[in-house]
Image 1: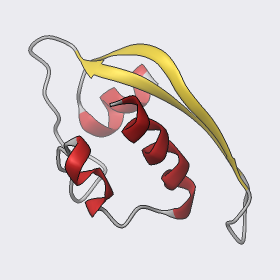
Image 2: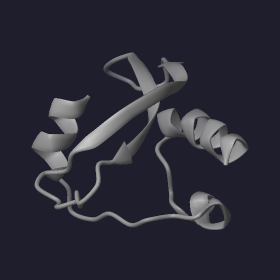
Image 3: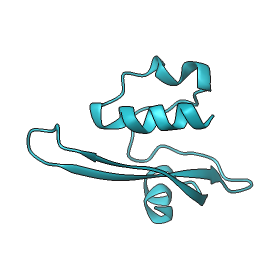
Length: 83
């Protein structure tokens, strides 16, 4: 996870506790298992998009303002409950 975030967002993170594991079988060509963890940026680190077109910081109140993919909804719900 640390390597992936560094590779795609050029950010350094601390990995915290596991939030949820999602098993999603709703995609036509593949099944997905996604392990979601609570992470924080390390001191002095920032996000630089290398592989993505857009990003934005969300508050608890704006968490559902994004058109999330079906597999992401359970993770968003778990994060909302946690906040």
